[in-house]
Image 1 (cartoon, helix red, strand yellow):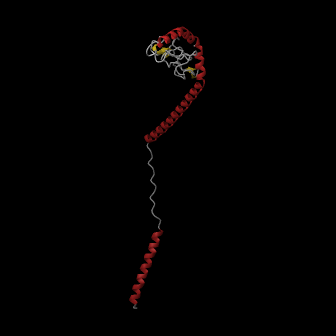
Image 2 (cartoon, helix red, strand yellow; image 1 turned 90 degrees about the vertical axis):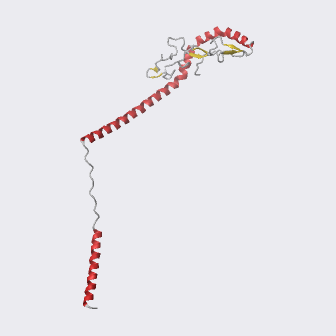
Image 3 (cartoon, rainbow, N blue to C red; image 1 turned 45 degrees about the vertical axis):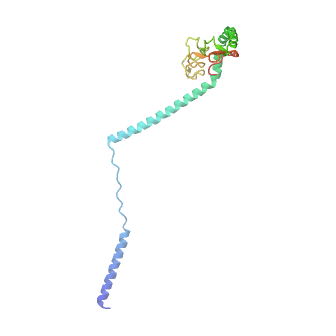
Length: 209
């Protein structure tokens, strides 16, 4: 080879070495990381709005907690009242037994005669003389009291001191008639007395029983 050829080869090799060296150095350079973007400083109005939002959230959570606590108290009061309902209602019915017995006695003869008259009719029934065929009669629990339709135990307040009234479970209405002041007639069947209609039971019952 000529000297000129050697020089050309040497130049090419040198160029390759320089290119390889530069490539290695370039790969060693760490990638550029953009500087962190700082959040903008909130304005006084924004800070105040955020505080108001937090306060509103706290008030909402507190209101929900109080509502749940109040619901639990009402549930407990209702369960406590219902545990005594049957006993208290039976006591009230027993206290009105004299009125019921008097009504039975005063209508016994009429019932017997009415059933005889019903047996002679084609349909074996006649209108009830007690309720005048209306199917209803005055509620024997509350109709003769100063406040008809009102619970006779709590006088319509629905309360027994700080608890619910066990008779009406807080409604304030007569437990027997539900505040309607009337009860289903115990002497007939839907306003009619048949020849085989039984006499009413000796013991007073409420419409709810």
